[in-house]
Image 1: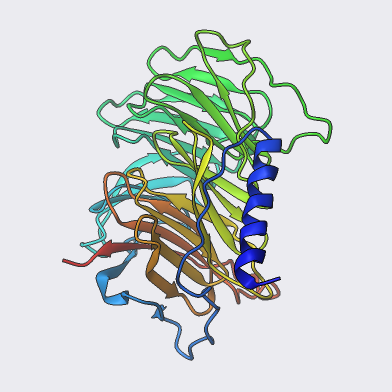
Image 2: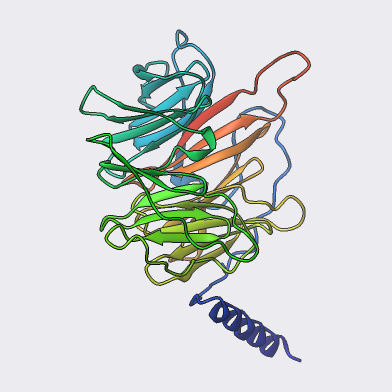
Length: 363
C-alpha cells in the first residue's frame, strides 16, 4: 500500500473513532518536524534553541530581597503586572520591568498553592496548601474566605470575576459579591469511572465547565439537571486547561502532543507534536484567548506555536529546571512560565528553587 493511501486510511479511521464518541474532529499535524529535547547547557541560565527565538524577550519575575519565603505560585494580570505567591503565604504584585521591587497584595494561612485571575484581571483567587481559599476583587479591600480541601481548587473565575467554580468531583459555585454558594448536580459516572477535575471555567454566557483528562463537562445553570455529552480530545490526555473565557480546552498527552479543542463545536482545531521518543508526557499546557496560539511545557522546555500558521514561534530550554506550569497572559501574546529546580538536595534540606519568567513578544 502506498504511503498516500496508508495516510488516507489512517485519517478515515481517526474520524470514525471520533464519531463513535460523539465528537467531530478536524485535526492537523504541524508541518514542522517534531521538536526534540536539546542537550543540557553547561550554564544555569535559560537557553534558546528554537525557531524565531528572537521574536520573544524572556524576563525573570523576581521578588525583592526582603520578601519572606520561596516562590510557590504565580499568575499574570498583564505583561506588566504579575502576582507571585510564596511559601510563607504572601502574595505580591510584581512588575517584571522593575526587578527587586514588589507590593504586598494579601497574606493567607500556609504556603500559596495556586493563584487564578479573572479574564478581565479584576479578581484573584488564592489557594494555600492548608486549603484556605481567598477570593479578592482587586478594586475592593474586603475578601471572601472559604476553607476547602486543597485539591478542590483554586477553581475558575468568570470573565468578570463575579463567580468562582471549584471542586474535584462535585462542583461548588461561589457568588463572589454575596458570598453565597450553591452545588451543581454531579454528571453521570461513565462505566470506567472518572478522574478528578483539574480545571474549571465560567463562560461569558454563564455556562459552567469542569475539565479532567477524561474530557470536559458543561452545566447550564438555567437547567442544571440537563446532562450534555462529555467533550474529549480523542487523545491519551494527561493534563488539561481552559482559556480564561472557557471557550477552548487544551490537552497535554502522554505521547508528546498538545491538542486544542473548540468547546462550542467539539472539534479539535490544533494537534501539535512537541516531543518524540522517551519522556514525552506533557504535564502543563495553555491556549491563548484569541485561539491563535497555544503552549506546552515538557521537561525543561516551554514551547509556543501559532495554531493558524502551523509553526513553532518559540522553543526555549531552562537547563537545570523543570517547567512546572505555563499560563497565557490575559489580553496578550505573552506566556508566564514557572520553573522548579531539578537538583535541590533533599539530604541537605534544601527546598526546590522556583523561578517565574515572562516571555513577551519582541517589538
